[in-house]
Length: 435
Image (cartoon, rainbow, N blue to C red; front, side, top):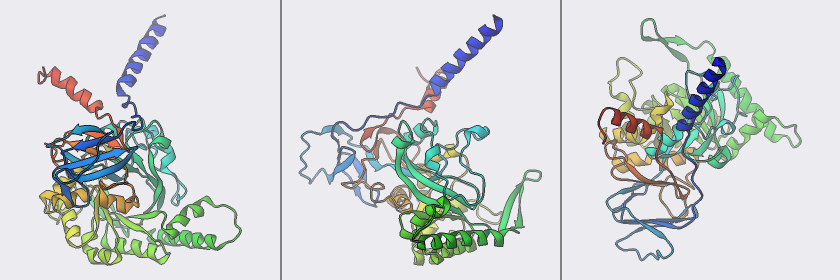
């Protein structure tokens, strides 16, 4: 009886804990047309409308206009006064493990890496967990879309762009299998020594072998495409959209020489769309990237420099250096997933280091949409595009004023409250900071 009683209470405590940790209920599809009146609309393409009308119906933007001059028929629209507030397209987070990784210390809660080196047929999409605690915290800061990306090996697999709302991955998917991720092998491996807390460089003795394996896979894929009758090979089948431009090749590389080699590798095999991910050394080959029209998605700029002889604020300068060189830049987050909710503030740091504010906004909206190949639907506030946007009381790139009042994903009104709000209120009351 004692054991049964203990088991009952443990089960009850577990149920209560799980109940408190549940994510908000997904929103219903848009039922009525909505018009946001009087807000400062940042369109995501560099333009700003100081007194705007932004209206949408059935998940699509129907009006984006200047309220001082436009003659818009708003009959049938629910009108929301957002005067003095700011309207933004939803921020887009590329190259994340959202929905694939939850608690890093628990192996069973990490599903981002597949065994093997060449896994082009792996799809992150089907492992996406809509009950992740990260989604609600991302959208609280304006990150309404995120690319869920596999990791590991030379070719990790296909990523998909996900909306931060949905009952399951079928509901949440925005664009399935938008990109294939290739980790270009480094010539020098950098390893952190926990005994001395230093970074040691060592040559990659497998470099030639790894590059040859990548070349062989692409050559096989090209030969596979030429066969009139063929047995289905999932690995080679998945590579085919790269040759037609239906999928982006994301090459992960940091050093200048690796970036050039990875881009030329893709070009050699006729890949139509290539994007560099990481790009720490991209300023060293900025002219090459500009001439070849290759976008760069920078890893976290809120980081320490890679080398001891670099300025301490080198990562902060990267967006400005590349943008001034004419390279299309986007911002992302590497390392701990929870830091990705600060995507807007990465752009704010770029502003502090010389980037124009609207240009910095493009680095987390329209530039990212182009880099991911989804610019036809999201990234800017334009008629006909998805009504994925939010309203902030102040500047969304400033953590002091980024306070969302409304958020919409394809017109659906999104709940902004999340577990972190509950924790803040609980402990604020405990220490007497709230009445």
